[in-house]
Length: 319
Image 1 (cartoon, one colour):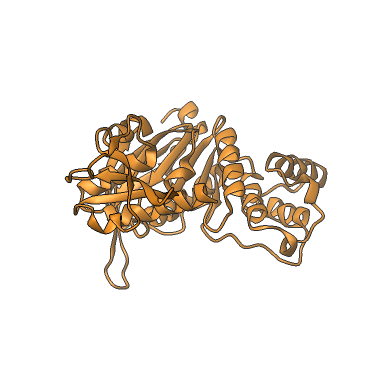
Image 2 (tube, rainbow, N blue to C red):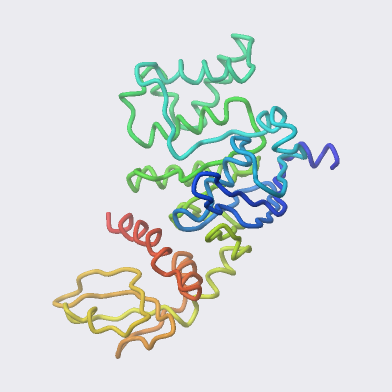
């Protein structure tokens, strides 16, 4: 690989399998991916294998088979070189609750190799400004909101200026406003680095994502643009107004995407996966990404697994 390719942080995954020794669970089963600069979405239900792949790329676990590299460096043989390339925000980010925001990032910057105090202070302030925490740099971590703690997690992942940012389930537990703020931040940061964002909540990908992979039961089952995923839902999504007890009378195979009261009835938006829409239904011309995901998974007989991510989006909109 050339020096230029190495510097841009490109991620390559070839035939990666991982079997957990305890229980023999096959978490990944022959995953192939190549990811370049920009925001890349790794989508799939809980337990699909996403977090296992994240940990392999972050050199936290060794794959059973196959190989992976970040910026041209092998994740098994060149761990230290890979760790210099990446910033990692795990699903559960914890920091010293009694320490101030600036203290936390300063300590982690020192551990990452920024030994010069003046240079380190400048970098810490720049990163906190970038993630919107500059005004609370003297606040103790225990006084931060959930969204602020997630942004603090982004700051620690960015402080050593990595070419790759790996983010695992970033918005779990956040309110709708903080989710929107987080998506905007990810879109901004992806202009200059690789961001691999793993989630089961479809809306987390936001408008900044132009490329994604859908992983299910350890395998990549879709790779392409969000537009391509949405195309699979065209002609399958409908809206209809039902009586209050109308949902119980819907044909098997219909998945409800959203519902809202309308007069004395209920307006639903649904996916007709191999079933006829209810009488009087109107087909939707432009399905959403969530509906594209649900339609794809429904064809695989996995609509229930996909519905959890769509349900969280629905709850967010309702809020």
